[in-house]
Image (cartoon, rainbow, N blue to C red):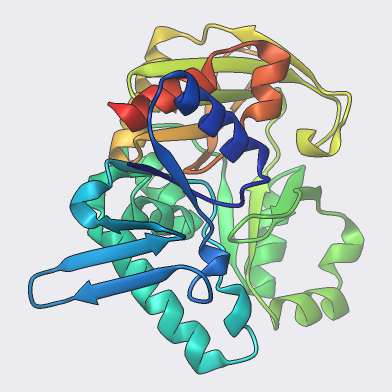
Length: 294
């Protein structure tokens, strides 16, 4: 049995489910937000055995062939009870870790992505080019970084929001003290060039150029997606990055400079792909379904 972990209405879940149906592969959708109210999970630490019950289906760990990790939603019915929420999350994460490589991607790989400064450092150790980056909450270091770079973008350390250009209002004492006393920030030198998205699925690499005048192309509804073949050495870098980060598949974002250099920005362990696939006709869903059924 193949598990699709996410919300049934998610376009990515729907696309993978349709592909698995076409391939005649059995699957179940596991919405973690419905646990523990509707789903049941049992674990025996003595022998490491686990059992997951989704509706009338009861699965031992050995019954699970693979898991597609789209989203891990917190239990919906324990939000008002912090102890229940922590206890539910603890058992659920123990279950996901127990799946090891059956999970695409593994719990360890997803956790790695949530520590983006460490992810960037790991990629830089591979010899891959990354932007000049500062992560922290020291106002003096922030000003020094902005003084070294003519254009700087800022974004949350964990992602999840759009990148914006730093302006002088952001660098006032009042703003810096207010914002940096609450949380650190990620600053990066703005790289002039073109956005490239590469999907790495097993041994396959599919890429497209994203033409947009916006600083963050995700804000541009008119962005144009053009399928391209990236240079062989960059495709090899993409594969190397995935291996180093423990990713069976990923969406990698690059910035291609005007002189053709590729700068790594991020490797996402659970990227959206349906809209990308519709606009480029690249066979991402098919290869992802094959990865899950292999």
